[in-house]
Amino acid sequence: RDLIPINHPRRESLLIREKLVEALKDNVLTPSGLIAHGRGECFDYLFGEKTQDFAKKAIEAASATLLLAKNPVISVNGNMAALVPKELIELANLINAKLEINLFYRSEERLKAIKNVLIKNGAKEVLGVDDELTTIPELFSERRKVSKNGIFIADVVLLALEDGDRTEALVKMNKKVIAIDLNPLSRTSKAANITIVDNIIRAIPLMIQKVNELKNYNTGQLREIIENYDNKKIILDSLKFISGRFQEFSLSL
Ligand code: PTJ
Image (cartoon, rainbow, N blue to C red):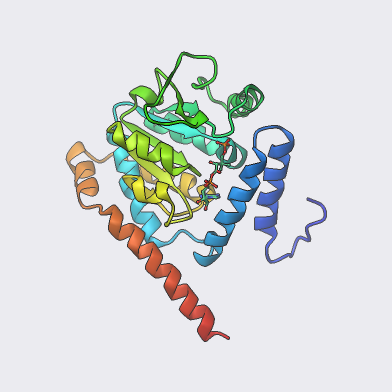
């Protein structure tokens, strides 16, 4: 941290990397989490490291969906616990959602380390570790293990930095999936019902803001937001934005 100059133009981004390196030392992050973050950084660069309009619209639809959900669950992995633990708990409290740890690189050590981070940041209950688990049909990765009282019975699941297999499996189980993924081309982005093409670092705080704003809306108004939302158009808008950025870059040479 001390090696990063205060006036370095990419200081924020480098500090985030530092957070991830710390989380790796604490067993919260898996080594592949660093690689996944690098891919995310590349997309984020193309989005100008800002939440663009298509992501704002998805965040609004996601917030309305979470407010109408009967049994919402936030699925937490290593990268999410490393970067936005406090914010995840604040959001869960606001929408009355359960927090469940679900890992691709699942190990007892990491489950415990992530649970500790969430408890330290104020979570009262964390599912997916000591409670009763079951499996998602047709899924063969460690992500198939879900809590009987959490993701298994959820109607809405919020997830991020996810692999396409589980997103597809959850959608097949008739759950509404809200995915945060900087890569609009990923299978998760395509399979999710609502795709927030943005960095979790910005998207989760913005969801907290939006939920606070929408919580006074009535059911009809929330339903209207969801009915007017078109996820395919949102993904197309994010792709158009990227191609526009390439044009901009090439003209600036
Ligand atoms: O903690 P675990 O064991 O569950 O493992 C988690 C990782 C992230 C290692 C695992 O799910 C994985 O390998 O993910 P992928 O397949 O690399 O997918 C990660 C996706 O998230 C990619 O499309 C990245 O562009 C995107 N991404 C990376 N960083 C961010 C992000 N999206 C939003 N915010 C980010 N900060």
